Image (cartoon, rainbow, N blue to C red):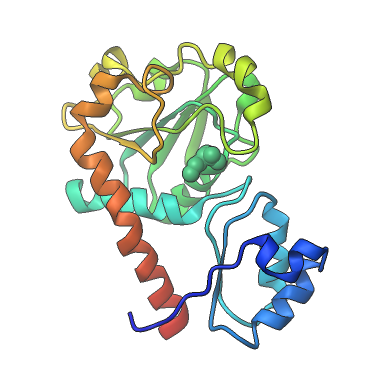
Length: 231
Ligand code: NVA
């Protein structure tokens, strides 16, 4: 696209020395045309965006992962047509960043989202397009898209053992996929943990779509940058 990128880890900038992010934002806005931030705290991105006069893109936080979900929706629409009116089943950790972004996307794109998750992992956000259920079979029934993510998101590693127990039964497998519409698409944002949130068999059966989904991150994020910086 003719631009240049600078990669800054926390250690490469004054953030690593304790500079408040609102100060980093006010320096960087004088040097670059946009910022893409991948970090843990959602608040950091919001604080940066609130003060910086340049476009700020959330490239993953503990709260949201909007670029990924835009890519997931793009991939569905590229292969199946409009997602409007369709049923999306999310099976797994409904409190994770990905599930939150699916919740926020549902009213914009006008699809129904059914989150199947244990009580303790319910999504804190919801709206009239979203239902939360315990039973993955209920979510998968007549679904147009089945979606899953790791049970152990970044930063949750200390809970790995507990989560491994809590999410037993929340796996995308043959029995679950059989309940969906015959032309169902299965998406996974990767990395996939075979035998945990998805079986090897289902991952491989839908690998063509899943790896197109991975590639589409490049195209969709170029689109986001173009929209934000050049228009
Ligand atoms: N929910 C996952 C997404 C990985 C891109 C995580 O936060 O680790």
